[in-house]
Image 1 (tube, helix red, strand yellow):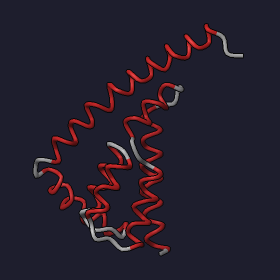
Image 2 (cartoon, one colour; image 1 turned 180 degrees about the vertical axis):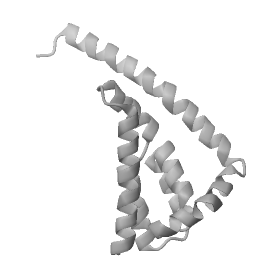
Image 3 (cartoon, one colour; image 1 turned 30 degrees about the vertical axis):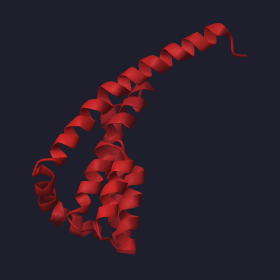
Length: 139
């Protein structure tokens, strides 16, 4: 049964958690937005091109992965819609992003439950990469 005390405790914990998430999300969002106005992201696509080949993706798709990993899946979708990608490439990107998106936010949430942030990031990124490699090989 929900009592006034339970409601107050839940509201307090919700506010504390929101503040913790805000301290992570806002700086990352500002940083990536700033980078989008510099040549750094284009340079990143060039650097990632050789690796992206193994995933069956063009170098520009690395921007979608970076945006999805760092910000959220909606930023990645914005990048994907601006690229001319095949259905195979979109499928690979979608699976990779579904397994590993919003890393700062979701890692902060996982840490609140007692899970190691390093372990969760490592597992999610590796699973995303292995899935991309497997899909490229299978499709």
